[in-house]
Image: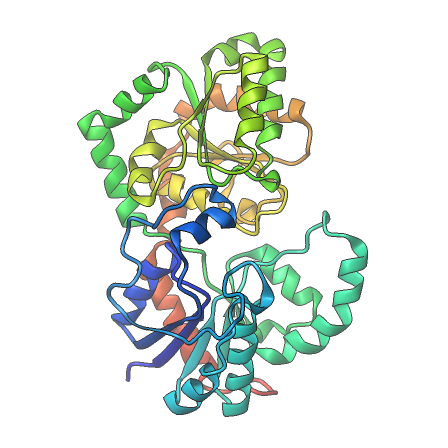
Amino acid sequence: MRPRLGALLTHPVQYYSPWLKELAKSSDLTVYYAHRQTAEGQARAGFSTAFDWDVPLLEGYEWRWLNNISRNPGLTTFGGCDTPEISQIVRDAKLDALMMFGWNRKTFVQGAIAALRTKTPLLIRLDSQLSPRRAMWKRIVKYPFYSAVLPRLAHYLSPGSRTDEYLRHYGVPADRIHRLAHMIDTDRFAAGAAQARKSGATRTLRTQWGAGDNDFVLLFVGKLIERKRIDLILEALRILRTQDPEAFARTKFWIAGDGPLRVSFEAFVKTHALPVSFLGFLNQSHLPGTYPSADCVILTSSDDTWGLIVNEAFACGVPAIVANGVGCAPELIEDDVTGWTLYGDSPGELAAIIAKASRMVSALARTRISVVSDAASYSPGVDRMLEIVEQVRTPTSTGPQ
């Protein structure tokens, strides 16, 4: 029998919607959205550019807008998504499981209470990790509450070892932690990359942004905000000029994205005459052709809970340099195989990694990158999700299900 599932999200997300479409093929799924994000809202969220995603987000599955009664609706505050009607919806739906893609908004608290009251199995997708950069007093203050609530609240869909560790820290038992990879539309990215290479679009793009066939192109994709640490990469390039002139001469850095720090980054690049190109914001349809035009992606964020641009790059056959603080590092990065890990915060260390990558990148075995990418595709993700639902709808552990 097809399971009857509900999914509660704040708003349609470009990474989740295609997976929900696949999941709907094997289940009776209804997705509930708390907020209608606008193009202007995207700009305020850190993109600094008003836009709508150019891939379909509301096709292939049943969905419903919830009535958001917040006085200040939006995604930046706890109370920006306030949807009390979810309580009655869960009560009437008689779901085999309710999935929540987050827990830090009022709508999620309302959904969790509704699930507990109706004894509906609750599955929370999260990718939190214990960050050493987080103020110690905050961790101490949170611990009594989190350790009292999390072990009893739900089952958890964890993408990797960092989130497993986070949940165990707060006392969540092993039988409530279920591994479910972070997924992207690998087929779309792989097909787009193959077409871009075949058509010559990758060479055209490299020429457009001043990169020759023998140059080493580093690519960042994302918001230009402080925690992405673009300044660390720029400083590493400045050091690379004297540390390894030959590697510097071949290296180009592309920044695909926009944000509040763009002006200051452009000024730094101009002052130090760095080989950096600002591609601006790129919508989803442009990314499958952009990734394979580069030789390596780079993500040096201080506190990214995952880093899905690495998944996207892998789907296009492109390796990555990733800071150890990024959640995906233990799962996706095998040094000198799928990419390289930056373990410290030194721009000199990063400069050395960039130099190493520039010489090794062409010799990497892309087969391993493909294997890692396939494991995070939608098909195994749907199969795994259905396994988890079957486990939680058949009580095997003590406490509320």
